[in-house]
Length: 222
Length: 198
Image (cartoon, rainbow over all chains, first blue to last red; front, top):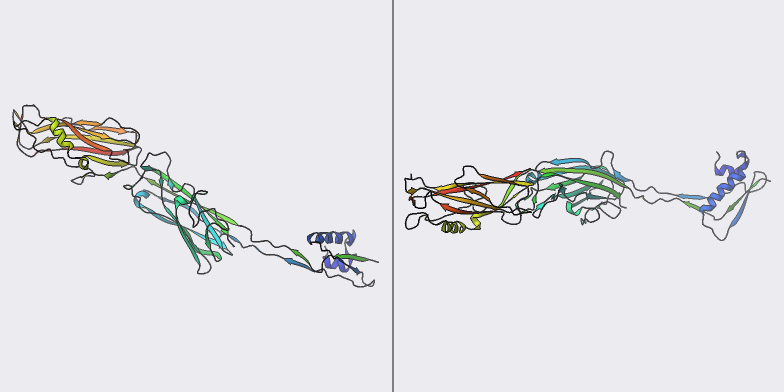
C-alpha cells in the first residue's frame, strides 16, 4: 500500500499494474467530490531527472466533526418498579434515579401508558378505575444548571398529552431541557407522587390491582 | 518519459466530511403498581350517634292515642318520615364490585313490665331502599319480630351520585290493637350493615 504522495513522487514504486491506473482512480474519486469550476489549470509532474516539477502539491482539506454524544450512563437508565399497597389510603412518593451521559444539552421526555394508575374493567358513573398522580423530573448537569418540571400523569399520554414541560417522546425540541452537559452525573431523578386519595370527594376508586408504565426518553438537544 | 499528469481543478480542493450532531435517543422504562382494597366509604352519613358510621334519630313523639292505645300506623309512619333525609337517607359507596346489605329492626320498647291488656312494645317493619348503579331493586324488608336480619348481596355497585340507602318504616302495631301503651320512654333501632364483597 502506498500513499498518494509517494505514488505521485515515484510512480515506479506502484504495485504491478502501475500507478497510472491506481492514481487515475484516486484522482477520479477526488474529482468527483469537488464541485466543477470553470477554469481548470493543468499541471504536469515529471519523474526525477526528466524535468520539473517532480511532484505536485494537491492540498486536500479534511473537515469533520464529532456529534455530541447523548445517552444514559452505563447502568444509569431509569428502570425498575415501585409498588404501593393501598395507595389510595397511604399515597406514595418514589424516586427513580438515573444518570445522563450527554456531552451537550439534552432533553428528557416522559410518556405514560395509562395516564394514571389503572385497573381493568368498566365502572359506572361516580367510580373510577384510573388513579391520578404527579410525575416530576429533576435533571442535573456538570455545572450548577438544573432543570425541573412537574406534570399530572394524565397529561403524559403520547399523542394527546398536554404536559408542556416534558411530554415525550423526547426530541431535539421536545422534553425537559438541560442546557449544560451532564456526563455521568448522579442526582437526576423521576419522581412519582400521589397524596392519599380522597374517596369521599371521589370519584371512588374501585378495588383492584392498578398499574402504569412510564417510558422515559432522552435526546440530544443542541 | 514517465510523467504523471494531474489535473487540478482547483487550487485548494476541499473534501468536506462534516457530520452534524446525530440525533441520539435513549429510553428507560419504570413501572408503578399498587392496589385498592375492597371497602365501603360513607359519603353522606346522616346524623349518626354513638360512633356509628351513618345513621340518624327519629322521634315518634307520644305513641299513644287519647284512649291509651297505640297511634295508627299511618300516623306513626308519617312521624317517622318526618325525620327527613338528614336522618334517614345516606350515601355509601363501596370499592368492591358487589355489595351486601343487611337490615335488622329491633322493636320499640320500654322497660316497664307489661301485663295483659297493656303493652310495652311496638312492632314495625323497616324498609330500606337501595339504589344501585345499574338497577333499583326491591327494598330490603325486616320486621322487628324477626330474630334474624334480612340481607342481600347485590352484584352491582351502589349508585354514587345520590343518597343510595333510604329508610322508611311501616306497619307499627302493638300485640293487640286494644292494648294500652305503658307510660315510659321507648327506644328501638334499625341496624343497617353495608359490606363490600368480591
